[in-house]
Image (cartoon, rainbow over all chains, first blue to last red; front, side, top):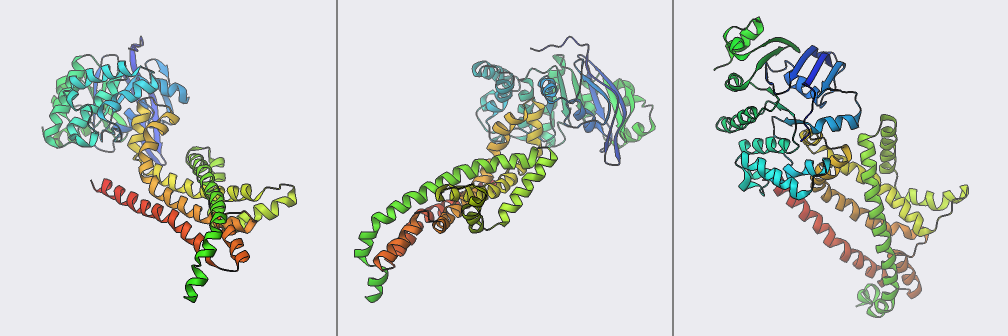
Length: 249
Length: 224
């Protein structure tokens, strides 16, 4: 376990990003405290995904500073790989490795990046797989699983690296409705265990249940930050009000 | 009967056969060495083409373009007959290996590039997000997925280059064709040439079928 002593899991100060002329992130300031659960919502194209993808640098920011677990990102590849080991990410389209079995998906990073011996890596993988009730499917390939199962495996794969911060990029958006629940349940139990989570999602039920803070973004800026009860009852920001009124909940 | 005596003369064939076999040995050796060198160089070239810094990428693109455009025979003659003028004297086997693998590398690089670019971006991102360094994710995640798409055209290119080994006879390498040609002159009968053609067919036809099979298998895998 690589528990970091840094009190802030992630910190973004005055972060900007452009895609050519398009200003995708406008002066983002965000602090994620250890153990905090933050839900990020907003209309599509508002920069939510871009923001969390900047934290593990799947997107490079153009100005401002980002620190993860107390370490300021320098753009150095070696430093970045070390930081990424402690930051799990779950994608909208799962991105499991299709040529590897479920078990291999879970052990490949711990074994090849952290040099965990195979036996130990497999034990840990089976531990997480049984927690998400997929242990008996460990030797199947991703294509043999349902979407909900695949996404749960993707969560387990991230957990096998024993991250201290988990990023979720619309983890339920690509799922059939009946499978959303099982994935959210896994995420709720993760939250209960005290994992630091930054979740881009439109699942407002999930936000109500576990979020410490809800962040509303639009046009690349953070428009409002509030505890969920406050945010849903009386959003201060006009655009947030419009956004919420358009969600069926 | 006249026709059979001319083109399928059993006596001549029996006498020519050991000569052809020696040529076949050289052809197979040239073919295999070329395919191994050309494929490995092609993969490296492709990685440079895709991931090196821009100026070096441009060099790789230039190389690939030039060697895809240049006829192998022209290149071979340049290597064998032109290089000696600058003091580089290569024997016929080395010249042929060099010319053929330089061209195969260019074609292989393009095939590999298509295969790697065929792997969804999410796979690169998933590997990166787990902290896997570039080369490790290439080796364990990206290439194993790309290889399925790459194998059929790669085999096809290898067959092509194997056929082109016959060009080595031009620079006096005693390959299958050269040996057959010599035997034909010596025995004043074209049967050895027919024999050589049959040997080429016997080796390459199964490989051509194999490509067909591999492509069909990939089609099925995609359809699934």
